[in-house]
Image (cartoon, rainbow, N blue to C red; front, side, top):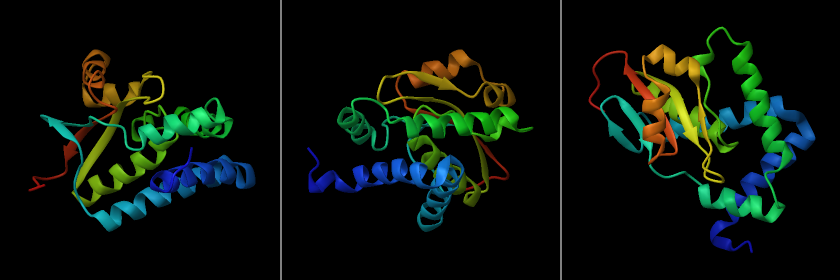
Length: 178
């Protein structure tokens, strides 16, 4: 049942489905990136979550419960979400800098990555999304190129994902007080 307390997250997820239906994955991807960046500009520089040295991770999945509930309403993950993830993965595969893409385990990762990426830029830092874990089925997804670029190992990222949903390696351009 959709209640007033959770209507906005579900409305957002329905909007993603409808946007893909109306305008396709490319425009929806652009919109999600724009929303994440705009929210980051409002929030300002910095990071959320927990730290292990220069690794930032989210121990909870933002909107994870809403995503699970939403999938239960549809009976499965809407194909529009899968199309978006496949589109981003194709962009990553075709890119000369695949380490600059998210490790997507859900469609919400697009928004999360653009938000975190922009907040890191504002903090004069660079992030690499080395891994994520789905709140729906706990499947781990890795950005192998980002792992290699940062000198991490898949095993170390997997270990962090045992207690996290999104893992970023952070490199500061210069020392920051954040």
